[in-house]
Length: 221
Image (cartoon, rainbow, N blue to C red; front, side):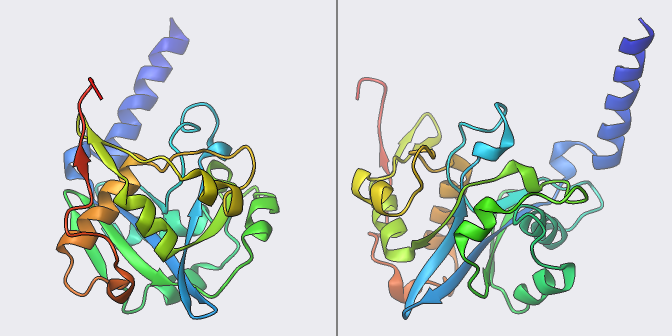
């Protein structure tokens, strides 16, 4: 009985600290770099997050904020922790300088240029004990924007959620064995929103998708 009371108290404290979801400013970041002149996007699977998030699939980096957070604060924090804190706070902040952003609902996505880090180093890196969110993600992969954009062309919308399976040929060449075969719905939703509505979308000259790349599907399909 006492244990249940403490659980209830802790839940109330957590809710008070972060506020109700409507008051939150949530944020994330899509890191990109140039590899041989081609834009590549850094993605990570959710296999490191345990059973709770393991089915989410591949995505950029981000999360929810507390009521006192700005979207940029959340994006920087999550974008650093989910890289297993391989960069200092100052280095993460530097990537956000002049980074364009797009807001959809209460989630703001930032597009930050990152110096190349070998994805295998991130995948194999042991999460430091003081890096609270570092164990949530992995493995990691740099994906050519052209490849990701082609996959987005195949996106389908079902019951308000995107269903986007990684093409088999791409999976064999880019994504590690035994990693997820899908992209995370929330990531694709934010990215498509930016592609269609953002002024000065940062990858515009690499934007090969049609204006409306998403097809609505129904259960009978």
